[in-house]
Length: 141
Image 1 (cartoon, rainbow, N blue to C red):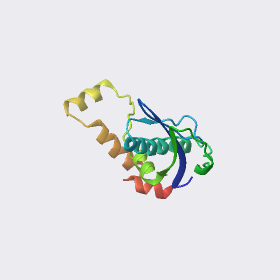
Image 2 (image 1 turned 180 degrees about the vertical axis):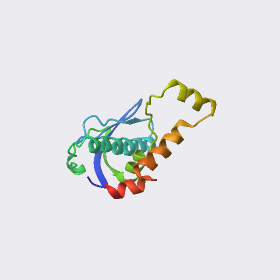
Image 3 (image 1 turned 60 degrees about the vertical axis):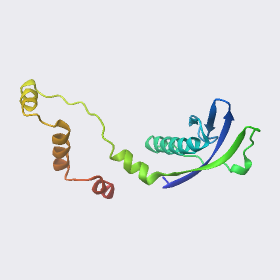
Image 4 (image 1 turned 90 degrees about the vertical axis):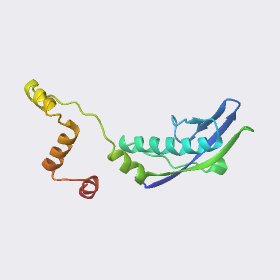
């Protein structure tokens, strides 16, 4: 798992917008209306695609050389960089939903007291696991 990847992308310019393809990463196909949006969307799509591959323990291919890509007259090949450390941190600290089951009497009492379930569950889990922030967990892995 690398901290930084650089992959070539092919931008195809059409009257209705720009489609983006990463030849080495099938299924990573963002699009855009403007060139600025194309570069932003390409970077975001590349990072998320690679993150998904990492999470699924898939092999990440070596990128093709941009100079070896064949393009049409309405296409241009560019390099797109994915800096994974900030994305991994963002995804690890992203709030997720978790369904829990509680007895009705406890739920009623907590609702009456206006309990913040997320806050209580997070606090309790951190106490139970002996960790208080994500950086502690990263160090122990």
